[in-house]
Amino acid sequence: RETIGLSAIVYNYSQEALIGVYIGGKEIGSMDSVKPGDVTSGGTICCFRLPENATEVEVDVKLPKGQGYKTTAQIEKWWPDLAHYGVVHILPGRKVVLEIRSVYTWPRKDLLDQQLKQLGIKPTVKFSGPMNDGPQERTDGVK
Image 1: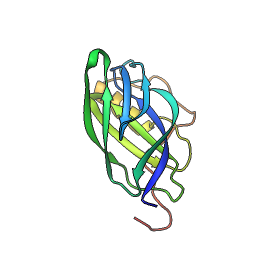
Image 2: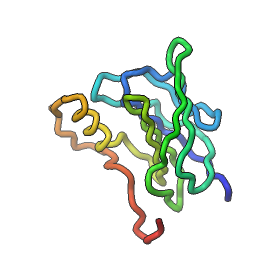
Image 3: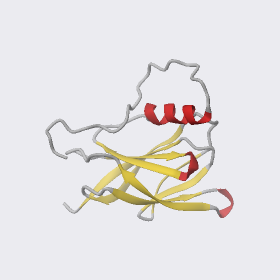
Image 4: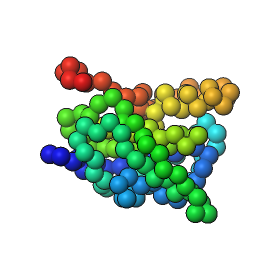
């Protein structure tokens, strides 16, 4: 295979409303802004394609009133053998992180903790629910 079809999950950690998030011209999500230190998601949208084992991708983000930006998102660490989800994390400062996962996932605790620290917000809730802890590493030694 040269390309892989991925279901998109977009998480918005920024204070900007997202009118549309696009990869390769395909809309993969839209959602409201969030309070500082919070996150929201628009669910899963099928599908967009990426070259297998890509390390970066251009993401186009449309904002209200015709504004927006394009950025190159780094694809973190690895592609699992059964790649199925392209998880896009839209961060404050118009930074975008993308990870490829084989299973459905949740917001990233490491990214939320990083936002709280940058904003000087002390965590007031000890979250114990499902949370993605960050990029995974393969266990079979493949890089």
